[in-house]
Image 1 (cartoon, rainbow, N blue to C red):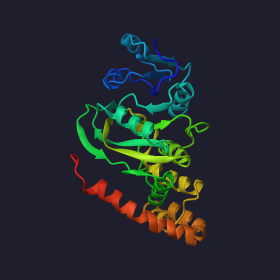
Image 2: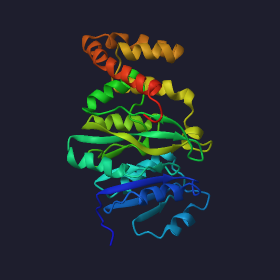
Image 3: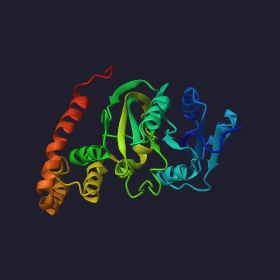
Length: 297
């Protein structure tokens, strides 16, 4: 009988991804874990998602279907609300885990109680899972504040997306994905979580991120909003410093100039200058990883 309080919940929020679900679910079942549940939360799909899920015939799978489409962020929040595991790991319905990623992330969370969130790198693929690139998340094990400062100083999400991260549900209590953000709702959630604990990266690629024209990122998260949301996120977290000012001016155009004019006094306080000095080596290292480390690296 399936444990009502498993060690891990793997949650797959899905909408009209019936044709991708066998790959996603299969990659979960190949992980070799015993103490877990697989929660599939269907956001009122209009395809044959329910039929596909019922065909898996696995007692570890819990299937919940929304009566109406809540939007992807609220569907993710419903996943968190319905999860039973001590730890929670999302898997986007069109992504595929690589073997061993769950065990590696669980090992860190089980052995390092100070870590609230553990992430991984990922391969970027086309619709047919052919590798086209790699995403390097912030490497190593660090305090949450160091990673928060790096993300805000560089106006970049160095933690990555839902399929990268595993976290402690207890430490995430009361946190939800902010649906007023599109591209950075996940990043905001992770920064809030890192305010409560430490950060770790397993140091290897953990899954295949499938890019395709109908993905949530392509349909609902236009890239031209990225810098606007970063400006808002930096302001919300009080992260203005000389580095974030430079980034805003260079990449956000007139909107960036307006933000800098509004926040330059706080950005150039002594403590904020010190934060920029400490974050600068991390930003240089992330630039190196993103631009000079090959896919096989």
